[in-house]
Image (cartoon, rainbow, N blue to C red; front, side, top):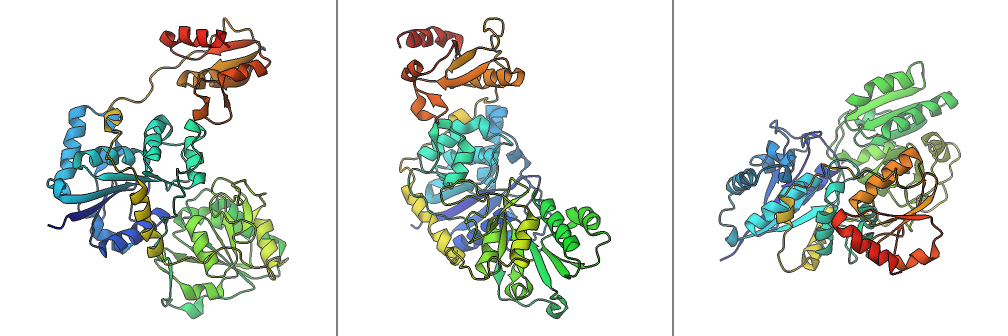
Amino acid sequence: MKKRKVYIFLVGTSGYGYWSIGGAEMYIAGKAKYLEARGWQVFMCTPCKYKGKCAISSLEKYLEVGAGWNFLSALPYKLKKYEQEQILSFMVSRLKLKDYNKCEIIIETTWDFLGYWGELLAEKVKGRHFNVLLNEFFNESYYKDNLDFFYFKWKRNELVGSPSALTRLFEGYKNVTKPLYDMPDTVREQEAIQDIAVNNFDEVLKLDWNICYIGRTIKPYVPAMIIGVGELARRYPDKKINFMIIGNADCRIPLLKEVFEGISNVKLTLFGDMVPIPRILFSKIDVVMAGAQSALFAANEGVLTIAADVDDEGTSGVLGYDTKDAWFGGNNDGAREKHISYLEALENVLVKRLYDNRKYDMPKLLPSDHYYDKFWIIVKNAAETKEYYSEKLSEERIRNWVAIFPFGIVPKGIKIIIYGATEIRKDYIKQVEGQKYCQILTTVDEHSEEYDNSVLSLDRLKTVDYDCIVIATFQQEAQAAYEKIMSI
């Protein structure tokens, strides 16, 4: 008997919701359609309340069962075991997975706390769970409290992310900087730009310079872009500019009014959300400003695209010319390119015309199904034995204590080494650096190979000129640590 194939996305946060448009939503919409066409039953489960309509209409049918599950916003390890079991039983019932032994089940999660529920649910139904890193930042929420879980998924090849994403997530933890194998790129939005008609296309004015921003205007780099267009308009008052925005701009209306007040050579054209974007629009665009996959799609249309750096107010320049990184502006080695202002970048394109005789140096994008197909390579390379981190994830994990640096013992102003790459060490560093109490030269640990270059092996103690070693371990481990240090 043929097994029922079930693919479950645990998605979204209460901050955005799947009635809005973004890269994650576009990716899941495309992949869900791809999966359904290949015989998978697709569910989307989210803590967001479903309002009956999505900006991406194709998502609506996948939300009928699993929307409004607000318990997914809770950390499982902050709940009692019987509460966890009640929630998991509810999920199994609603998703009709009681016959899970007759099913092939894959769970995909894209956020930290959803990943924890995904792991627990996967064990409950004996499925496979893949955590896909779609975030641009990992400093917020609960990623850093649970790096041991993500390390477990990484070792099993069930953590899907680029070297850049893994480096930003782990920040030296266990020295993780890349996948264990050459993991293919499987995250791609559905075809965002298509050959469809535009209502009143003739009314879209082609002025001297048509500049377009594509994407969510809530992104933190958008104000710098808007200000850059305003500066350009003031510097070149003889040039008429059509500043176009594709994406809901409601949250930036006050800034747009402030920046362009008194400027007569700028026309604002606010298209709102467009799914898909009509390809013909690009025939009236001179330069695009965008980040992430919006930048990739625009550049793929042959339009010069100034790439946003998602954590900076500047840009590395034009995608495919100055940088190949549509997220952080890195070069081929991962190093950050030199940043310039959006005003300078716009001048380079429109005034100095620096790119007129240069060749675009990025591969053409393929249809999204090509990237979704590569996901099965990841499934094939994942650990064959089904193992789960559920026992540890169901226990209390939030630290409710702080280690106090021994200020009364360690003289101020001396040079110290910390022994032990532990949670205690983190507290010590924060306190010492905050008060500029003394100079921390480095950290040593007997398992230094699991960390980045900031943690040295014990034998390196002989090569460092220090005044004192501070042991950062729990009391029951301190004597053994002392004996190891004295044996060097």
